[in-house]
Amino acid sequence: MRVIGLISGTSVDGIDAALVELDGQGYDLTVSLVEGLAYPYPDELRRQILALCAGEAIALDQLAALDDAVAQTFAAAAQALLAQAGPADLIASHGQTVFHRPVGRPARPDQGPAQLAYTLQLGRGVAIAQQTNLPTVSNFRQADIEAGGEGAPLAPIVDLCLLSHPTERRCVQNLGGIGNVAYLPPWNRQGSAPKVLGWDTGPANSLIDIAVHSLSAGALTYDVDGAWAAQGVPCLPLISRWLEHPYFTQPPPKSTGRELFGWDFFNRCRQDAQEEGLAPQDLVATLTEFTAASVAHEYRTFLPALPDRLLVCGGGSQNPVLMACLQAQLPEIVVQTTDAVGVSANYKEAIAFAVLGYWYRQGFPGNLPTVTGASRSVVLGQGHNIALPR
Ligand SMILES: Nc1ncnc2c1ncn2[C@@H]1O[C@H](COP(=O)(O)OP(=O)(O)OP(=O)(O)O)[C@@H](O)[C@H]1O
Ligand SMILES: CC(=O)N[C@H]1[C@@H]2OC[C@@H](O2)[C@@H](O)[C@@H]1O[C@H](C)C(=O)O
Image (tube, rainbow, N blue to C red; front, side):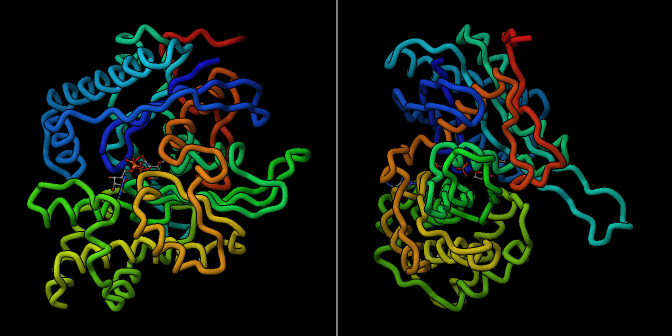
């Protein structure tokens, strides 16, 4: 079956679309990327999404219009990919995250039940199905949240299928707007699946992007190839201070978003940097080192053991300075991109949602309770124009 996976993540840089050829059942899968495409948002749409993410008030009719505009753009991304790579049987669309509130755990058991997580992705699946005339699966995070989970991260189960190794312990680290890890014990695919761990490690590119956008007076949206960071000197005392944030002492399962590592966090960083007399490049270098340091801190604090190999994906894997910082923070581990083992670092997340959409069709559960904290395994997604096998 040919499935198109679509996602726009917390960087809001545009839609990643992957046409994937899939075969097999459950974990026993063959997955091959036919073609990937990055479809940028129109500037005005991106501005509106970022404003909503930053907490700007919006009327409900405007929210409905924005939801449909995002869906239209997702459908256009799918159509561009279809024109380039040929037909598909199914679309699996993650949509655009604009809000994420993790599970609220009470400090003591007698303080009542946990507050369910809340997550909102724009770009409703039914509108994508209508425009493309293809069956579409969307709303992947909801069923996990209903089972008491964080609703994120969801990719680790797919990482297990695509990137685990018979003898090596591996970590897969996504560096999107937010960072998330999947810890994959060795697995020879004979016996039952091993216990995979995973959680959001904190910021990835979100703070670097905001810094570069703000310090370049809107001329740049990200630190292309780490050029600014390479010219600056990281301020180590600030990194230690920022790592005191309570997120970095909270044990997994945990998830986060731009609500925590967005504008407010950046404004605090900028103020600290001003007090230390840092130049703009030094601030970007410090945020880049901080991002790598937060990943290493999370591994050393919460993993049962460091992995033999760290495979990095997402846009941050294209930033050589961030990759060098990560390697320097974790000298005992081989750090590479997922490309080194044959999985596209740019499209891995879009591929993951294609797999989750395929599993929805099979009725195969797509969440990992060990990762999200859900009480049970559940089938993820909501189908539009889909007849399911009985
Ligand atoms: N050549 C590059 N140099 C530096 N940074 C880059 C480069 N290419 C991409 N990036 C960074 O990667 C980001 C986009 O990453 P990606 O598309 O993986 O994020 P996302 O999917 O939106 O986020 P998330 O995984 O958190 O949902 C850009 O905003 C930019 O910061
Ligand atoms: C709510 C939401 O969209 N979370 C994203 C975000 O981006 C990275 C990290 O935070 C991860 O938890 C998740 O995305 C990936 C694709 C996931 O669910 O695995």
